[in-house]
Image 1 (cartoon, one colour):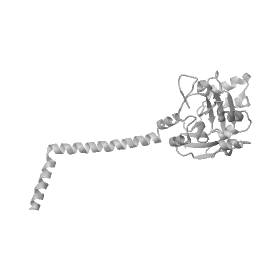
Image 2: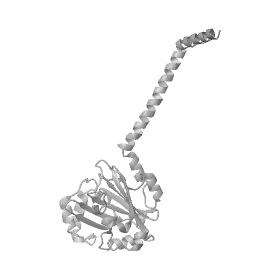
Image 3: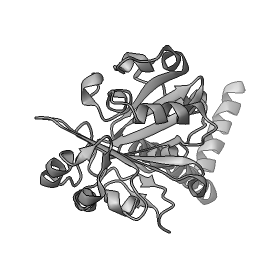
Image 4: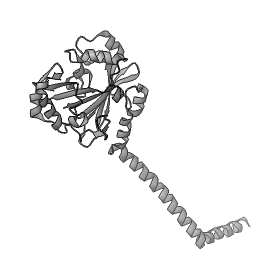
Amino acid sequence: MAESQNSRTGKWITKAKQHPVIVILLAVSAILTFIITTAGQIDHIYRWYAESFSYTAVYEKLAQMRVGLSSATVTELFGVPISERNICESGVVDCPERWNVRYRVSTYENRAFHLRVIYSGEQVVFYSVTSRKEDFRPEIVTIFSDDHKRLGDATFADIVPAAYGPDRVDMFLGTSRVAYWEIKETGRPGNYQTYYLGHSSAGYSYEFAVDQAAELAGAIEGHTVDDSRRSILQAFREHSQPNTYGFFDDSSKTVLSRDFSELMNSDDMFLWRALPLYEGADPLF
């Protein structure tokens, strides 16, 4: 009897499956399952593409970088640094012990850029970004124009016009390595943020006026260019694009400002070695 009942149940199920409504419902269910599965795969592929080939996510993270961030926040954004050391270990000549105690330099790496950060304790007091790819063009905030500029699209003169600076410059020309940097203190209008712009052979070279660079190298004395030779500096800045930008706090209340003032006015190699433009100090370069 049980066998007969099972047989009737089986026949009923078979007939039910053949019913048009059931067939439609099963078909709709299969389609929905396919769509959901496919959508999940598409989302996975998109996320993989965005992380691997699109710079959108990276641009968003870099836009969050600023002086004053905690090291924990930077790590959350960019992961663990590939190198980290006290500042005096970066090759500073006659490095005062207070700097070694006070500052450490951390380097973060992405396929498209290098991020160099100087911490005082656990707080960012300086950071800079050096591009490694031609199509990597992060935005640079500037107070000297209404629109924002991007690495690879703007010259030094576009970012900081001649009427405003720069305040200090320097150039290094080697047989295979090139480095140029300039800074512009913005004071109160710029929220006490000092621009740090540079070109380094450690990064991707956008436009760089080699002949004018050689002439400029001979015109720089003590991180400045005499007014009589200022046109040489301006010609170079109008035809060269930075591949590095950065910021540090130039408020007179900060220890960093006093230290950087001392460093800028000294003849040692601090800026080449501790910051991102001196290729000889870091295996990464």
